[in-house]
Image (spheres, one colour):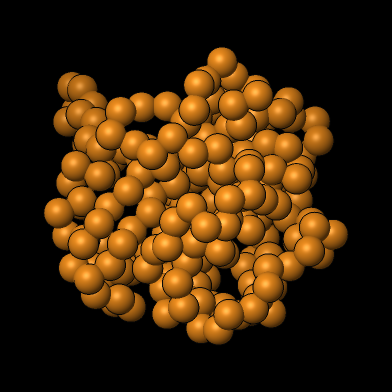
Length: 201
């Protein structure tokens, strides 16, 4: 919420959340789980969750390029895009995000850093990848490393400041690393193409 308030007015914004995200409250004896949408949804003009499974979501296969599906002021990608298969699907996912974000809008990412979270997924970002988004019409507003006990994640907030084409497939994979030893789709089932799971969308 801090990142949205800092750069954009949430009450006038359409937010797209990638993956049905949860927050956890450790209560010593047990862990309570809360949907982020249930907590934060009221702060925004519109709040839409896209995923392949769940209720109160828009079922969307991120691996299919559908540039006109949404128009948003804010897109959050907290541990979701790395699970989209296969290589062309991974590229299509980012092309979608680029197409869906309005000029002046922001994207908030927190994704596993290359060399961390081994076996979590096959696709890992680098800081160089986020810097390369500047050539696609973005300004990098925040870029940092968050350290967790299971590995590092890269936190990045970018603002779309001009309308430019997204990078081509080969350029995309210059700074997006593939862990080929990990099986496709990693260990998390949601946010993957329907062809990998028996999901009707």
